Structures are given as C-alpha cells and as structure tokens.
Amino acid sequence: MNILLSQRAIGALVTAPLLVQKAFIKQPNFLSRDLQHPSLHAKKFDESKDRWQVRVNDDWRFYFRIEGDISAPAAGHWPPFRKSRRSRR
Image (cartoon, rainbow, N blue to C red; front, side):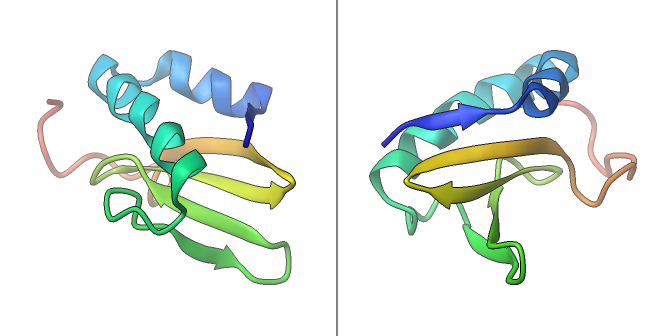
C-alpha cells in the first residue's frame, strides 16, 4: 500500500517541530501494515467524506482517505490553532 502526502501535509510537516516530524515518520509505516495498530489511534473523522484521523502525538494529527492507496491531505495541530499544553519535546 502506498502513502501519498499532499502539498498541504508536506508543508505542515516541514514547519512542524523536529520531534513532531520524527513521530510522524513512523506512523505511515504502521498505517500501511495495520489500520488498527495501537499507536495510531485511528478513527473515522468524517463519515460523509470518508476521512480518517491518526494520532501523531498528543497535539498533532493527520487526516487521510483510503482510495486504494492512502492519501493524506492534511497534518497539523489538533484542535487547530490550539497552543500546546506541554512544552515542546
């Protein structure tokens, strides 16, 4: 299974803190093997658009659709624009 990142997702990751980038890198590997992997905390985010959500860390999520391959249109803080409760790790 291929994971396809949109320009929006890539842009969010480029500007993300280094620890978020490192945490993100392992998630697509788990996702390509098993949608139910415990580290992912995958859940259906928007039923009407068939959009899923996967946890990167406590504050970051990425969203995707499954269309043969996995397409990740966005990544970012969850909820959007919230300041982190924790110091950056």
